[in-house]
Amino acid sequence: MVRKNVRGKGQSAQFLFIMLLFFALAISALFTILFGAKVYENIGQRMEDNFKQITPLAYISNQIKQSDRFDSVSITTLEGISVLKLSQTYNDQEYETLIYYQDGSVKELFTSVDSGLTLDAGIEIMKTDGIFFEMISEDLLRVETKGSEGQSILISLRSGGRQK
Image 1 (cartoon, helix red, strand yellow):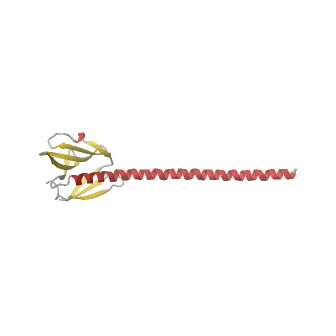
Image 2 (cartoon, rainbow, N blue to C red):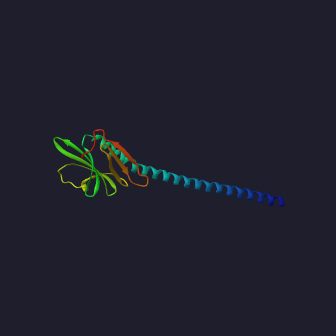
Image 3 (tube, one colour):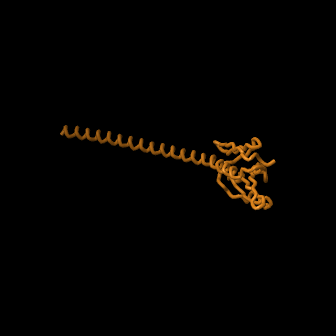
């Protein structure tokens, strides 16, 4: 009888040890999953921030390269907003593409010079934290995105410069 009782205590000690080991494993698995989820969330946020900083620069660079003709790229202020103006001529009529930041988005407006449209008529290209244009010299344009990790690019105008 004594022997049976000792054997029961040994089995309960083993069971208790196994349960403690199981709970320790479960808690460490839970913390690993929570840590991994936080890392995944941070990676997603960084990717989104990077997208918001780099994509507008690539878009604007492409637009400038398509419109890079002599005397066609300039920076102006319309309605109190800094605007990149790309001028073109189609069928003897003057058109302009206006790229600017308004209401949390980069916008674009393609219109004839005498249309009378305002910047509110532009279409949203993408949401971003802001954008800044600066002519550094006659043939060098700097475009910068705003935000926590703002990016910038320098674009050389191969056609000979901006409008005066």
